[in-house]
Structure formats: structure tokens, C-alpha cells
Length: 257
Image (cartoon, rainbow, N blue to C red; front, side, top):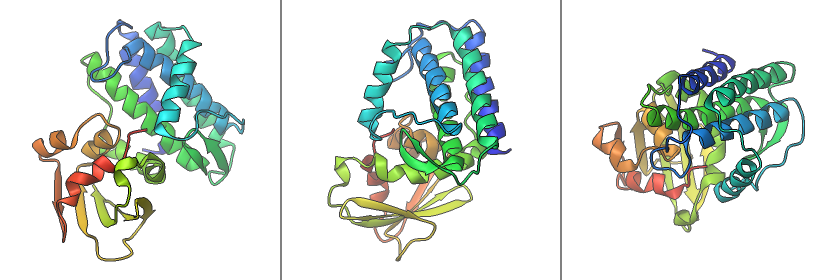
């Protein structure tokens, strides 16, 4: 599946859930939002991404998780639509608008996004990640099958890799360690020097800790939908190396965007 096909398929799956008689007041598990609010956010974000993909300048937040949360609250306050069917249709439309806009531009073209500068191809990965995260929440709340699978997760990794330095939290202060992540067939290293991470294809030195994790578990953990104990309880991760205990600390170094 291409990234473009994945974006459209995920948006359409979310729309199907929302159009099947969804109650907009249904609360999301572990979140302050309702289904209607999450759907409204996806509709707004889809328009934002489509505009950026078309070359428009759309500042939004300050690139930090807290700044994005504040921008999301402000945007929702100005957008009263909560009808699931209406919002589902809008989510599908904006996903296609992004794909169409991006198709006419160089995928290496730099754009400014809510998570900082990145190329257009990575912006597509960002949009897919965003759809999968909130789509998962909506599916769980409505007791429907979610749309996160191994193939989809592989397409989110370009964005996840780039977003890591922006999602680091205060818990990483002074941290020094080299991690090798094995996510399905994907491999990359995250090396901390005095709390600042560098992401690279290969580790610059022998890893202190290697983390082999199921792709779906990785994405849900990274997005704050699962916790590390949940991942371990479901036997979705294995860690080893000179300092295997660092595997427990790794997810705590980041705040989900």
C-alpha cells in the first residue's frame, strides 16, 4: 500500500465508523474528548494538512506537545460542528485534498508544519499517524475494529523518527544512552547526549539497549494509547543489551504529540 492509499483508506474507515449512527457524546477512553470532538479535530487537522500540502502558510501551535494541545483547544472552540456523519465526510474529503495537492509537488519540498519543518513526503506520514491515532480512539470508543496494522505503522515511521526530538520531555534531562529500535523490519538508533536525542539509521556505537517491539504496539505506545506495562503484559516487546533496564525508561523520555 502506498502512503497516499493508506491516508485515504484510514480516513474512509474513520468516516464509516462515524456515519454508522455514532453518538457524538460518547467519551474517548482515557481522554477528555468525546467522539464528536475527536472527529471535529480530525476534520480541522485534515484541512490544515491539505492547505500546507498545497503550499499555504498555516502556523499552528509552537511545535511542542503542550503548544499543539493549546492550539487544538482554541480551534475546537471556534468550530461547533459535532455531527459525526458530517465530520466523517469532511475527514474523507480533506484526506483526498491532501493527496491531490501533494501529487502536484516535489515530495522533497520543505514545508512548515505543526511539528516543525519537514519535507512533503514526511508530512504525509504525519497525516497518516494523526489519522491512525485519533481513528484508534474513535474505534475503541465506538467498540469497532481499529485500523492500525503493521503495514500502516511502517508508513508512519518517517514522521515518528523526525518527531522524536520535539517530543522529548523533562525526564530526559542529562540522559546519556544509545538505543537500537527494531520495529518489525525497520531498524534505527536513538542516541541521547545530555538529554538531547539524535535519530540515525545506525547506532554510532555499541547500543546500550536494543528494543524489539511489535509495530502496532510501538505506535500505540508512542502515541500514548498504550502504556509500557500494557505492552509488556501482552508480550509485544523484548529488550536486551548492556543496560536492558533502559528499555523501561525509553518511553518515559517522551511526551506523545
